[in-house]
Length: 235
Image (tube, rainbow, N blue to C red; front, side, top):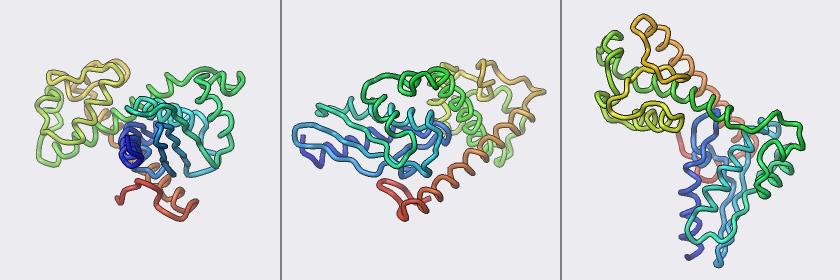
């Protein structure tokens, strides 16, 4: 595996790693500061975040996920993922390298592992994705009452619909063509007709909040490092 090919594979793999709160790839957010791989397969990735005090649990998830995907790239013999310029970098980097988990990495200071936190943010992503899929339908004249019986398979194909399916599947929620478009993200149960207006309002509020936080983080990262960052896309 050549160095150039190896680095491109690693960057492609890192596209699967998302900021848990923003539900966006760390590559498009500019969180990947650099990526190198040696001829004998030693890969090194440097990550950076918008502020020195970004939540350590969010940071740990991203570093751990990045380590997992880089380690799985064919031809990578050894992976090193390093978070820089963060107050908890030493604990996070050491814990991920040792595969110690979040709680052990912080010497008992953490309440537990991060499975519930990841699930909470996936549920937010499902709500935000619901708005992204439903807004064009409503704008096209589909009445809210029709959304109650609509299935995922009846929705117009789109990147947003694919993304919603993926997030639902990650939570173990119904995601096939016959699954209801509107479901409760905690249980997977279809939304009742009388609850649709409130459900859509919550979905819109969630989507607006996520997009606002994404914009803030992009701006803070640019201000902190005075550039767009490797892989960051224009929006």
